[in-house]
View 1 (spheres, rainbow, N blue to C red):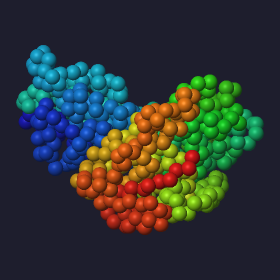
View 2 (view 1 turned 45 degrees about the horizontal axis):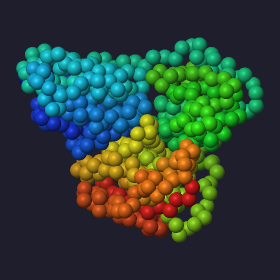
View 3 (view 1 turned 180 degrees about the horizontal axis):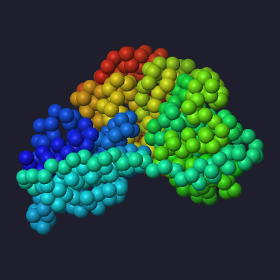
View 4 (view 1 turned 180 degrees about the vertical axis):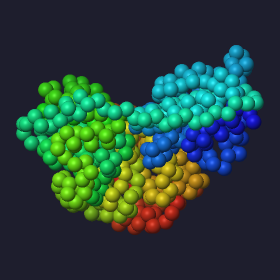
Length: 532
């Protein structure tokens, strides 16, 4: 048995089931070992950014890490935007990165680089194996490190000779680590703030991470209903379980001004799996801190702590029964079933984001997964789908665009029995368009809706918001996606994904119904008219 074979035996025994791969010459022994394991699924991705994004999507839905296979420092560098997003999503992810044979490094061949330095930027744990026998131990330790807290990125580096040299020592999996508990003092402080008096609605539970899963949302809603607090969540949640029958949560707006307005009446805020809200970017003459300066804050549980246990303890401290959260005897927190109906479509012949959202709200299948990288279009889409059938909503956690398509690929492979709907801006889709090919190859059940407005629309808005000088035609050309227009039907069909184009609400609804009714990947190019 060589080092690569020994490693794969250990990884499979540690619970690893899928590898998103973009390998090179230094990883051929690893490729061979994966090929000989019927219990390790291999998914080829044509760009490393797709590899990392797909592993992120898989982890968000499976609650366990996927394995990636990357080629030296340059390969890892190509994956780093979506490594950043995965880090911000707090998901477990294990990177396996090949390197030159140890004795070859001194010759400074063209692909030689400091792999560990590349990996350290987004990884919480990094190490290179020291021998063929040590390679399997490095893999086991990486899985253990990835499962710390809410989830971490762990990267181990496999020099090529450690993969092909003989290994004699088998390595057992390491035990899964337990999440740390929130301290008792945090429970007491949160209870004190919630019962401090003041006007109803002037206290908020600000949620992120595992706090946005249905069981924890029901607990938070029970606490909020009893104390008069508001339920709010971070702008870009990794996974929000929402829709009919689930508690309503106010999502913090993306732009700083409406976000600050949403928070302006708060005098107390309990952070649960989330950091204090700040502006996404800095703007001339505007504050970065969004909450009122005199708003008193307390952290009930950090993102890496046991959030469910903390919420249950807080509920008990307030005299509530956590076992009744979400049941018939629970307090009557507003749910999506009783929410205010969406505003009517004012331009019925124009394919606006609102029209798309209204179709989606009516037609979304029960238990679907929605991956939102719709950028400016997403502002309407999120609001209007609050009454859709119960679903999970995944967002662009780290702000590095090009996440939506690969995230959808990974989510679909984690949950093959659930329909995935990807709401995708056209500009960011071009960053990782190769994900469509992997969707076709793996026959993932994904409906991609490309919001084609032929523009980086969000940047046109930001151009004015940052106080830049009056734009010239050259300035605007750097934010424009025409000349030539992207043809998404041709792009998708060229990679094996059936595609259609919609220009009216009726066309879109017909095409969406057809795509949702059939298994496998589909793409709808929606030529949207956007009114901001």
